[in-house]
Image (tube, rainbow, N blue to C red; front, side):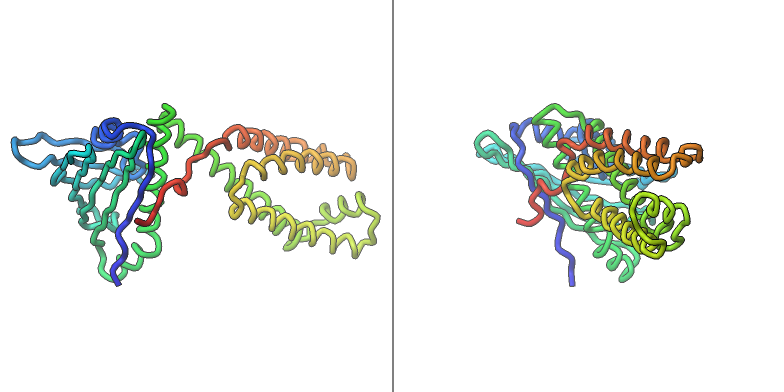
Length: 300
């Protein structure tokens, strides 16, 4: 079964001319489009299609280069515009072999409906099609939609794309860190290892029998794992950050009250939790108006 083409649409409160310039000028385009690290127009012959080269850095000094061709543009009487593209790459690191698509710009009162649709053939036969369907095509659709949101904020608010991406990736690095910390703290020292210090601190804080303290440590471990999973599943990260900012000082004080000797340990509750508190505050400062692909329509 043939995969559906990738379709992304967004409304931008700006003129068609400004959206056109930001997406057709390669110097501007490469600033907001997550799919490309650089776009270079090649010398153009009269009455010939505009050719360009693109490059996408994938890390560790590795880049995927490809070619593109602007096969036609159309300016309608209602001021709507269309730009058609033909693109591809010979790089074996890319699932994409060759594809076609278009960008369309439609004026609607004081906004521009900006949308794209594109499709491509993949390399590596059946295996390439499977990887594309499960991983690469959803990733490309998400990257396109996220990039459209960057363009929208840039034109409407003047928020530079580099600053937007810095906030976005910092926000998600912090989110993934808290996901890992809570999962690890609940799973390793509490459920798998049942560390004696965890049991001792719980026994000192609560009026429990030794066997009950072990059970309570296990329960706390499960709660921490659930809280870690919520960091990935729950969308309102600002609310989680606020909750965590209240929890961490309480956990710090509780550990010190239970056994003040922990303050002499390396990476003790003061140094460890203080680091998490600072990261939580940074996360709160960054959590306002984070980029999202959900702002775009993904079907016609």
